[in-house]
Length: 341
Image 1 (cartoon, rainbow, N blue to C red):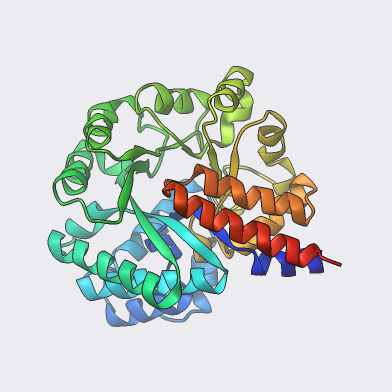
Image 2 (image 1 turned 45 degrees about the vertical axis):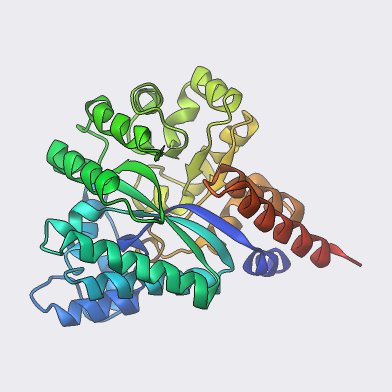
């Protein structure tokens, strides 16, 4: 596995399910906590390890929102966004669709236009200075209800930043039915955004069906419970609807009890297009390279298999055709060079 881990570290990659605030490194979280001493978030990076140990999904959401509360100025937004891209560059991530929850920032008093300017400035700098192409998914925080849905839709449609490509729905699933958000997704889709809601992470396959039928999902965030419904698996495979799988996240939030019980094997065996992602990497003590290592072990993949997994993410992305060809060619060239005698 040592050679395989080295291969993964250098492999060009794309990531499709990774959260903006949830990607803040302990160093950045600690610095923001120190700048805002009224927060309960620890200012010691080492103490954050215990702080980011979750008892269940509800506890994770509570801790996550405490970190969200540290992002209070456009300067905080810009710093966070660029530093996330810097961490991605270290992992040879060439392209990422970063899930951003603008409602969480604008309701805390950040001017909406300043927020858009901050993420766009960071996006342009990341591509120019780090070679990382970022695109945005604006998501509704489901726990905040229809007010958040209305505001997120307005921000996405009326103030649409150049990097915005998709529209999502995150937060708790239990008690937050997907169909109630149909009209908001209809508006976003009509404006040209792609539908990528979370579904089936902590609830059953019926939530995934709702995301497909009511929200017209083109990809499913997590989809962990899809394997409970053979008809759903067959539908996902037939229509080439990708699942954004985040193995370590599912263990950290207790959505799955044990890695060896993770349903990724059944998903792949059913022919579903599976992509591997890190979700909220520092909070879960992981990164995308680690997640590829986990997936390689669970699926029994060698270097060629891992490269094909990386190409799944490129295929499932909302990159244009030339961008997809470029990164896929990088993956092929890297793999051929690695395996050459």
